[in-house]
Image 1 (spheres, rainbow, N blue to C red):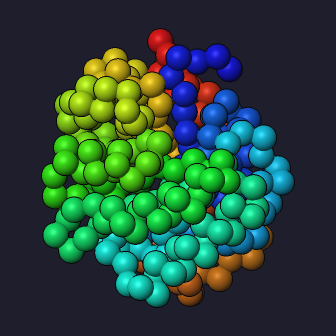
Image 2: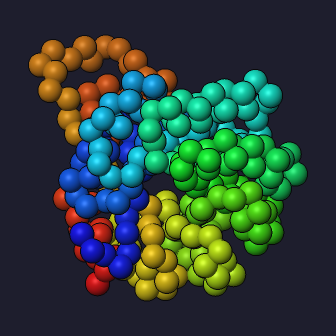
Length: 250
């Protein structure tokens, strides 16, 4: 699909990644545990995704939920996950590390970029950017690390709320790095967001609730700690992907 505005889908499974591909997405960010903001998917998930996808496969490098201040052990895990992504033939990784004061941890981020780039693996800086203390200084710091793009909601809960800041970030970036709006983007707002910000890449999950095919359901137990619904799952919907891309380019 020759679209002026391209869509990256945040895929919580290989099933979602395939739906994104079928709908015309140019890239997926593969992750798990979206209710925690996303964590690194399993090795099996990465391998099967690489086997079945012909669009770009980027993998989230995030060892846990919570903040973006990582211990030495957690950073070592991130390094090993990046190495595995390289070995598996992934097209890119998605990273983000902060200092306690909310500034970008340039040294650690550079180490991951320098590990990935010689192998042709691209690097996106994720929404840790939105949790940083000064978005415009962080923009310059991330450019310095060598990342290719920044995923951002403009420091707000949703991209629409942060659209004014996103527009300013795109202007300040001036082509030095891609600014990709994400979070809360849907059919109802994508056209306005693209028109207002001038973004050329957007990021959405385009999910819909899918009901379990289980015939027997034990209604007397809750397996998940927080969510309480064992018999449904959110999966990227191909038709939603198609609609979002179409509306982004109207």
